[in-house]
Length: 257
Picture 1 (cartoon, one colour):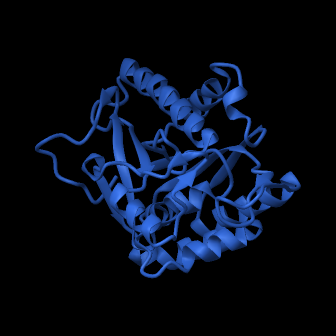
Picture 2 (cartoon, rainbow, N blue to C red; picture 1 turned 45 degrees about the horizontal axis):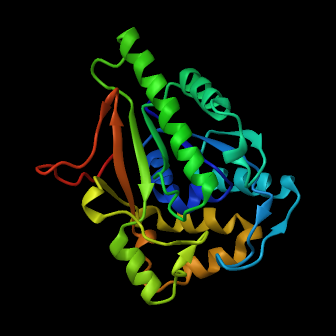
């Protein structure tokens, strides 16, 4: 059985960034597991500009477990870090835990967010960089053991194309800035993989709705007319085994991981 591991900072990151992809691959017979760095207790009940508030950690933990059940996820590992404080952790702290999870789980595919964290959230960026480092350690070990000869593990970054982000900002579906930086997305030419999630779009919707503490954000997201992220999810192939893998001049966009 093929295995996919999603590595994210907070509850709901998995559903917003990759919920359709997770559901699609579970339906295809893959085992999907999640690692979540925090319990997401510091939440924004509305849009990005809404003031933060504190929530009991158990609420968001249970919401993620419910969303995981909707998506068909086999297990969720919480690392129990403090929401909003991942960048303050000692160098190597998170990376070591992720490396252990990878070595034990031996996934074929790893998903995380692109290095700007999709929303400029520092926690997202930290997890992207930590997951990349951990994946490199894992891929090197697999290569040394010669267990990846035919099927090396792959690392993908979930992302938002800049053309869609610009449109969303122009329509005021997204604010112009997030975390005091322009909300930019990634250059379309960097995108290597577009996953069609139309047949599991309803599953992604239900998973998002399982995050009840985020009901305003979820309702806003689901209410965007013809929201492309309910039809497709976008990725950058970052590594194939120990090799760097970015979109090249002669590459074609793939429709599968």
